[in-house]
Amino acid sequence: MSRTFSALDPSRTPRLHLAARVAAAVLGGYAFAWGVVALGAAALFAAGMGFHDAEFLASMIGILAYLVAFLWAVATPRPGRCWLVLLGGGALMAAAASAVQAALA
Image (tube, rainbow, N blue to C red):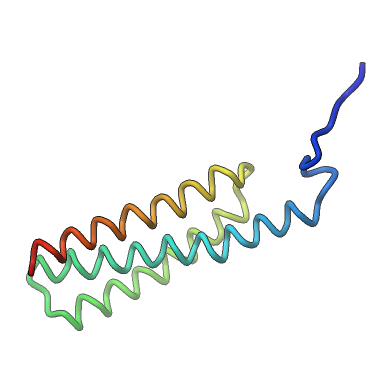
């Protein structure tokens, strides 16, 4: 039985596969954590917390979100889905944070 391989098969291009995982972990994790911090700070401020307290708490949560996103990006069997979730989730959270900030102004 013959087996065909695509040009980007992970078993044939391990360095490209590793580079995609590292990029997803670092860049995608950063985008996701940025969205968490932006949305968290805006939501906490809208809930009545002082701005600097909300910013600090959201930043602490963002560090944990980055760690979780980084580890998930390394462990997931599907890097494409990982990119979609991390970048898409980060963009959606940043858009929601912008809407919350616009509602406050």
